[in-house]
Length: 538
Image (tube, rainbow, N blue to C red; front, side, top):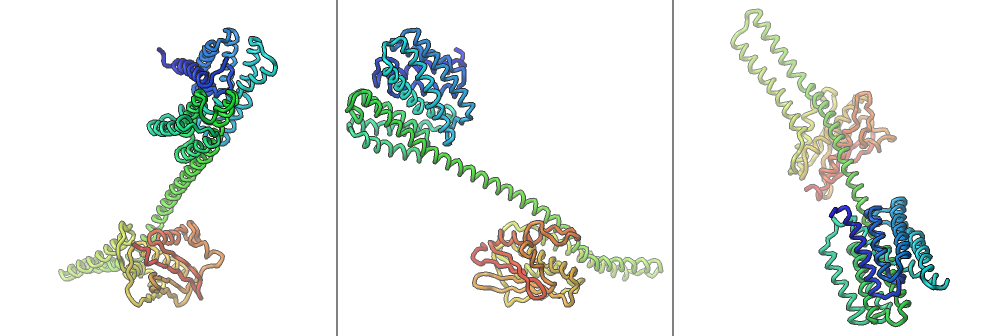
């Protein structure tokens, strides 16, 4: 057998079997029944899930079911055609209204319910009963009742079973069927005990006991679980009506059936309202979490870009500093070389001169090599947290730029009563200090200050270590002082400033030490304040 015909054959069989099951549980004299008519739910679900190719199966299933209720072949044929057209309309409307097969939003549920209540079932109920009125001796009042019974029974079947099957078919790979079976078995026994073993005769008590569990399952699991439980509730409760016991056995068969339908309908309405609320909340949380992850990832990439740009800027600073440091030893080497050449040209070169050249040139070369190593070590990234001396880290930083300070005639003073230690990344402190000192040096160059002075003060307040770096270079314009830690903010456009130094410094202090970096103007200058929180540095 070709598997492509399997859904068509399956829908025909299921339509017929569930139709006979419905008539068995709550008997009807003909195909018209006010009872929940599950075949309509099956037909709608299969039509939406598999498309137009399923329509012949719906036609066959309806035709065979109609014949089995002693309907003449001709009206049975017309009714089957009407049901098939109903399925075609349903497929078209479901696509046109852009309803998701997940049925997990209020919009989708409202559109789906509107389609059933105001289009599909009025079409099916009115036309099918119009066909039957020509073959059944009935009054106009009976026609209205039959139309209502057809309409009510069919919408109940579609509202109860169609959403369940649509979700089941669409999401079967994600469903834990063992768990679903477990919940269904427990709940079915619970309802069986209430309706048949305990024979609870009050509909409100039964509704309360049943609905409480359904609400719990809807919140704990999802709509699909709750809808499955309601389906089995409908079977068991309908069976209690057949036995003449339970909450729906005290009135006529029609009244009992209507009350039973309303009992099931109340379950459907409650779980869809609650279920969609919780589903939309879950979707909102997932969307929010996804957006947060995307923003975090975006921020990480931005931070990486900023770090890379800053590293390039640091390389430029590094080369500039090395150039400053190498000028004197290079001059010494040039001088030694010239002395050696003159001695050779005058034929006065002796072994003593060669030895002098060798020793002194080696010292200068070693000095230059040490400068390179110091800079490389300074800019090398810290890999782990260590316990280090803040005073030592600051001294190493000052040693690197001392030639620049001397060249610009900047006096630097360190005030500290003792040596302070902390857990963290020493290079982060050094780099922060270097960026701040570079800003002071550039401010001095720009403002042409006499008696240039930078003061670094280290002290302790409670558990916090406070590093204050101040200068008398004129301060920062109050209009921009709040922006100096922003990325890419720079006042050194003519010097190709990146605007990243202070931003990186603040980021290092905040991220590596869980601490803060602030700035304020003081008399004739500016003060940067690094507050290292003692309790947060490990």
